[in-house]
Length: 313
Ligand SMILES: Nc1ncnc2c1ncn2[C@@H]1O[C@H](COP(=O)(O)OP(=O)(O)OP(=O)(O)O)[C@@H](O)[C@H]1O
Ligand SMILES: [Mg+2]
Image (cartoon, rainbow, N blue to C red; front, top):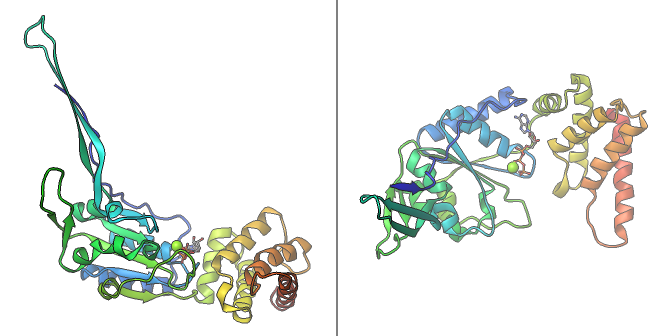
């Protein structure tokens, strides 16, 4: 007998230490705080605007927990089967019977087979599930999480040929870490109260100056004084500019990396450095995109960057 079948893997991976991850006192405290909820069995939710370090912290937390993990990103197209699984694979069974030497008997049977999706794999095998940007999925798709998080039971759709739903008991080591950006204005959904109520939400904001300097140094390999200049400039623009599109730690990293690549000095007298700052910061900082006002706003934005460059770099 020969059987052709893809063997389900438990799906989790042990996360390797992330090179360049910065753990300042602030991040250490945040991690410990979040870890205490996870260890007590509660799911943790990092919520905050773009670029404040939600995903990086979620991965770090999963790593610190020291269990195999799996990663999922919310998507508007998700249905519950994308979380739970579905009849989407095929199992092929081929029997070759050569009992009597001169007779060849073959049976070929192809049946649809169940394939677990990430959430089921995590619940079955006790993985740490990182559900990044979960509010990009429609609330109906996330409904299955309600009983998983509260009762420790997952409802599975009826197997083919059966009328009743099946229930899966959630592994005691299963843990969940969520991230979301509630301020995002495109492609996100409101979270149902029932789900929000089951999560311990930790609000994240831009890191303190010391942490931003340490992250910029680590990601760009600039010296401390160089990284500090860039961070001070970006933080000043964050304070002055319109809050909607204020630059994040990503802007510090981009400026630092590109300046290094173009061999620009981190100094306002270096034309290339001024140009990079203008491109990265003025464009993230202008207030709107409608019509003729755009050029003028961009001009004002560049002037603001120039002014702050004189003060900080
Ligand atoms: N502790 C850290 N150590 C090193 N780099 C970090 C750290 N935290 C954040 N970063 C870096 O800052 C940038 C933004 O972080 P991250 O992608 O986690 O933010 P986010 O809040 O998930 O953003 P978004 O909402 O846009 O997905 C990334 O380049 C990341 O590598
Ligand atoms: Mg993210």
